[in-house]
Length: 120
Image 1 (tube, rainbow, N blue to C red):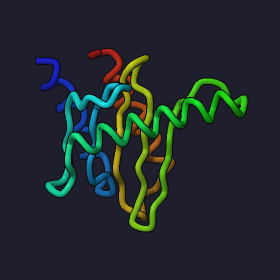
Image 2 (spheres, rainbow, N blue to C red; image 1 turned 90 degrees about the vertical axis):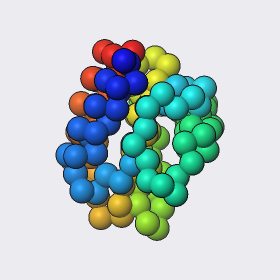
Image 3 (cartoon, rainbow, N blue to C red; image 1 turned 90 degrees about the horizontal axis):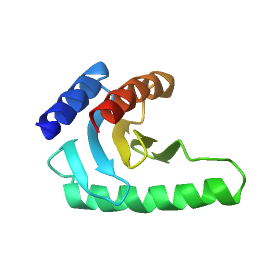
């Protein structure tokens, strides 16, 4: 039941922009709770990488006096990976194209994160 609700939020998020290629709801320890990923993405690897990036991001944010971590943004040649907290132990991870308008993506992801945190 909860997984269906999470998938519904992800489906709505993916539908907000053609630039969003994949998304997932992941626990901070790397467990994928729901995802809409492309066929070449391995769910377990996505979860493990997200957990590692979050851990490093949290440590960096605290060590450099930036407060609580809100987001991790990775920019690659072919696009972005955005991880945003959705409650205390959950993160929504979004994969976009290089041409994505980040302001709009941030807004859509923030809305999805709020919906996800209510489900969790």
